[in-house]
Image (cartoon, rainbow, N blue to C red; front, side, top):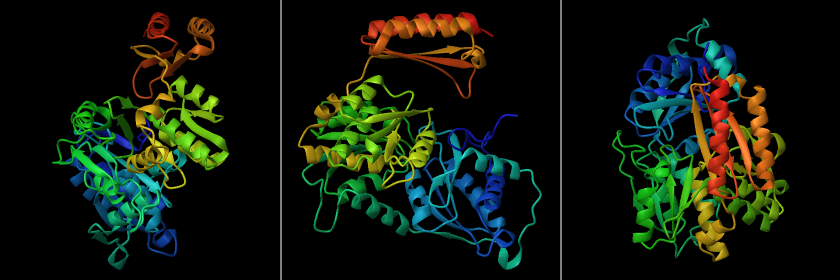
Length: 454
């Protein structure tokens, strides 16, 4: 049986995979697992609910709210807010449950439902499995005064979130740390369309905004962190110091330097890590990244006296490692960046503010800071229609990987990663030159295709 929850909640095509019926059932199930109503405890639990602007979020969030309330949970509907805002406000509002209806960077027809526990923490596998099991369990419905109530927050909570964000870089009524900077912002026609520019302006920046007119259909459409081309052109045309691009739910942030060159999550992580270390604020002088992070980042951190710890792909695994060992900074090449001192999940707006503060404090251009985190040439080949379960055990594949690693030595890296959702194996190679990376990757891919073909 296929597990309902993926690496970041339940996600799929809205109204086919993720239906109103499923959303209703998930809301009720989450109430039993995460809440403590009636038979579960002494107080009536409260949930905070948010969504991104895609059209299907309207009926899906209504269904989730109905499921929660039917199980005796009071629901505060925040409307359209970024995922990290929802996570922060779960803790700030002392709620028992957080629910975000969003498919993040996915195209508009998709949608998803992700849950947060008390404190704004993402759920571990055991809690997700418990919610999934509860979907088919019998339960006693409350009635009368014991059913949950619903209310809509009219922007007060979002304003509190903006105040929280700007305070993390020292913004006060008398101090605007980003004053004098011009920053271009691509909001992906998503959940940060209002809050993202507002936070940067509150911190003193002159903000040039694009793709901040969500209509329910245009989220992530040739915009945001997955399509930074428009932002690259705007940064140059507007003579901005740099630009930032969010995704649909603003848990990612990528950047563009003054010349229009993309600065990815690895480089942002490296810049922030070096800045925090110089201030004596990088916990255990350690940065947490995934196995997909570029070797150039690992080598640059080694030269800076910073240890890197690598996890499986997915910001949830980065966060688990950080929480287990008290690390303060981690993230992914895609722009999921977690600053644990200020957030419980990846936060694109928070990342943008701290990157801007770092640029301002150093007096350097973003391009110069990014140049200190060089990227090794990288090639990724998706080998389709293969038995991915044998990728880690086939002798010929393992021998080919060993030979490639010997050829590259310390100047490169090889990674074979089975897809979590498709019958394919991802072959990733980093090397000193693009030609070498392409050649090694093609050779390995051929072995994988020949040995693991279905």
